[in-house]
Image 1 (cartoon, one colour):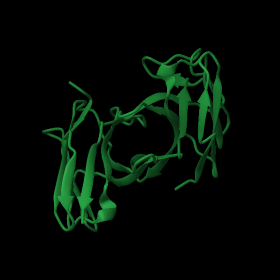
Image 2 (cartoon, rainbow over the protein chains, first blue to last red):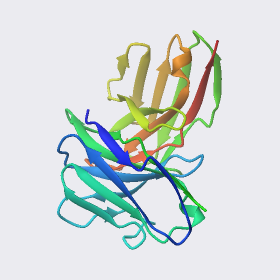
Image 3 (cartoon, rainbow over the protein chains, first blue to last red):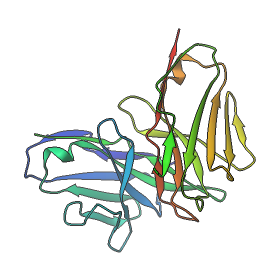
Image 4 (cartoon, helix red, strand yellow):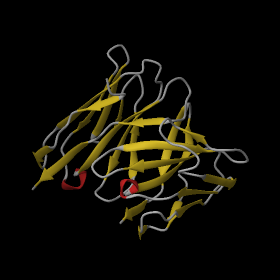
Length: 116
Length: 111
């Protein structure tokens, strides 16, 4: 499976500011995704990062709050804009891989965000 | 009804025990099924995909019942290193690559 890195690994930010999280993969991948894991909760899909076009957002998530870039097949960024304490969460990127007919996903190490 | 529901746990078992996790999903169109494990403060890692015929990987056995929309994971001869949260995951339907995660069941294996 691909090696996935994220930067920063953690950050503490003030409300009203924005943070951009980077996700780098060591090989070209078609599918990249961004998730959020709030404290004590499971993962929720934010959006699919599409190379060369706008990201596809899930219900409850909007581009103005979570702009995403995908300039090539190995890199994506997620920005958390105008942060509030409710945005404190772990943000994870994942990449899609294929095992036969099954589409598996592999996750980066995550970015732990605390908003004060 | 939640898209993916799991045993709430937590499970505390002694080393060597057999433990079973259950999961139900609501979308009958889902076609891909997985178990992930997540260690504390770490990212989820794919444990195994779940196939219709059931599959086994060492001490781990996964089964799928499409009619009942039910998935299970059995861990035999549990080890201390099996302590983690186990996440039941299904795709959003059809050939969708989007995944829906259950809330997870925490397992602690005690010496």
